[in-house]
Length: 593
Image (cartoon, rainbow, N blue to C red; front, side, top):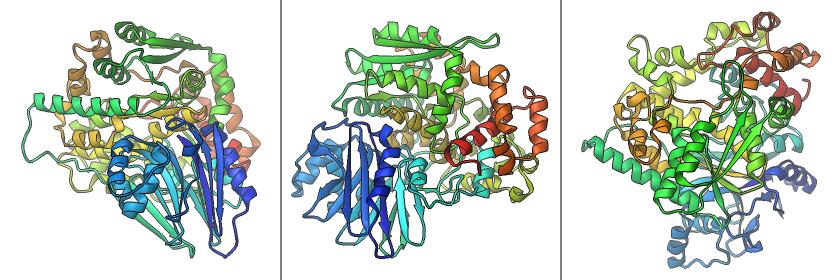
């Protein structure tokens, strides 16, 4: 896991080394162990390293093969790199390291741009190909690893976060109207290739990008997800065994492929608890687990230790439990925002930030349960959507997910941003793509191929990597996702959601963990609109910077401030917080305008 950056010039000039150094410095927290730079003609590559596989200097980056004329910077982990190494050795390739980085380099030398189809893992990388005089870039199938870029008439720059591109300079920081509609409608999900800033774009999941020295860009989507039933029907027992085996394999790979200890973020929910159970089933000894909790609120408990403790005790894990004061949550919130590549309204972002700070003092790698709800139908809105039988696919989705309908969006923003229903158009197009048998199949496929990438997955990557901690997500293994997408919907939505996972867990986990209601990260300090939290939001939205930016309609802000505890989204988020977070991110990362 690392931070990557680079630049290709189109005008015959050479990249400024000082620019690459600034970009690398902005990525320092993602890769605190080492750094490196590659400069050749019109190309510069920069890297910050977090050493996890092959800790020696032989695995340092940028990794260069002078014979093949290739240079690589890579962020992520390739879980099948031992098998690929053996195959490539049979084909005549020689290795000087035991790293997965070198496997990617040799895979590209062997297969060219189709090398990505051989890689099983999470990745974002760029390879300078001297012979072809082009830069080849790729992102993993689900977009677990980020890849941002900025292109002008003179150059193409890329990096692991927005901040690195901004520090390089020359970025158009005006607001993208389409992205703003997504930001305020889709729970802060802005799908690729857009970001909130016009001058910053991102590579879509499952996609490669090739750019030459004339600035010509070619993209190719190399993976798509089919959500159709198999030709030969399977029984519930057969599905249970198939999902168990695929998930167990995903867990095994993500725990075993590391030269450093690997822990588990144990929330106490079914998903993370099941990861611990599968590790124990595989005979892993001395499992390391981590949980975090906050102060209680009169209306909500601030922790789920009752469940995480039960799992830790059941499996005898080496458990670490952290208690965070509410005053600490608000004090550290600006830090978390500074480490968001894009504005993220999920209230658990600061929780992951604080948890990662503590965990990074113990391990460099953790397993996390993100993706289970999206792949296996765990959220409360899925049954509601499935039960709908009136209106279009978009209508059935909008009524239970959109933070605000288009009419309310038009009231939210100022006149300059009152344009078309961009989010409605996007979702309608995604929900009518072929190769899905049922409506709920369309919804879940859209979730795991678009919505999850720019909400929980991005949030976990940003907040863990802010402390040089690699988070691995077994539930987003692409082979597991392909299997789950084919499974009948009743095996997902049954038993209150995630029926098949609950069936796998029965007998392995304490019943109270399996049968508990679906939980969400308890963050009372940021959930209930009042006190210091309300004061922060009021000060932000009443600030001179917010007024001068002219993004949000003042009448709408005043309406929310007059009754802050009345206006919540369909997913139970605070409308006021969504606006305040957006403005805070812009102030701290872009400036007053």
